[in-house]
Length: 148
Image 1: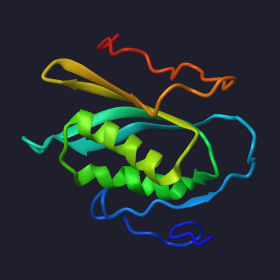
Image 2: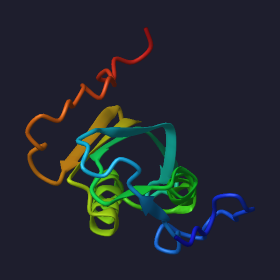
Image 3: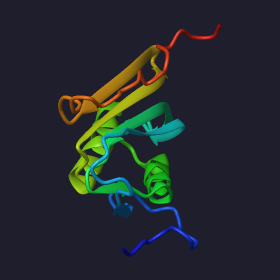
Image 4: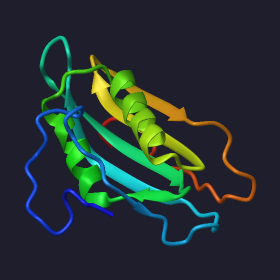
């Protein structure tokens, strides 16, 4: 196991494509369980205006042979701060990259984006049906209701 980031200083990647995600062996192989990462202050840039976009991301997955190392995931997500892309591209792209590299039994991502032009945009993607018997809780992010 060769880890790029854990236990050593790491610079913010120049782009999401340049970011290296590290994976480690699943500590509970054969167990059916769910891992959740929440990034409530995720940011990227509008590809047209360059203005910042904000989202609350929730990534759920059932590990296969590996799990993603959390520091590398944080750096990958932070690399979007200077990356211009539409909400749909960002959300689905994160899910597809994790699914392709980690090969989980199942993965879903919810991107709960704050309003742009007065319209909140929520984007959801998953690899397929959750495995039978996997407890999959609600992602717990309420629909945008403006200031309360």
